[in-house]
Length: 71
Ligand SMILES: [Zn+2]
Image 1 (cartoon, protein in one colour):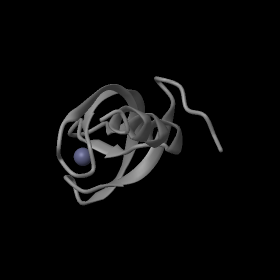
Image 2: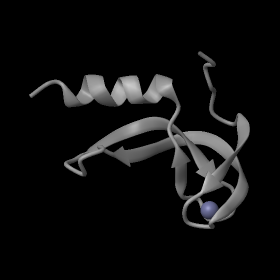
Image 3: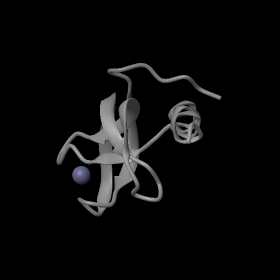
Image 4: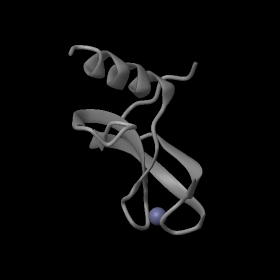
């Protein structure tokens, strides 16, 4: 899998803009899939237009699962 670094750029469909946008990887606080809490400092693809988190690379979803598994 590709490892992304902060400042890397990509393209993705932004659900907020509803179009293909360029994205920049940056650290963000991201909510869990179930909306129950937030993981801080996750590397995510951020829309360059509206700054919404567009996608989260696999490397970060692993971090989220690890953080969520400590009940
Ligand atoms: Zn957007």
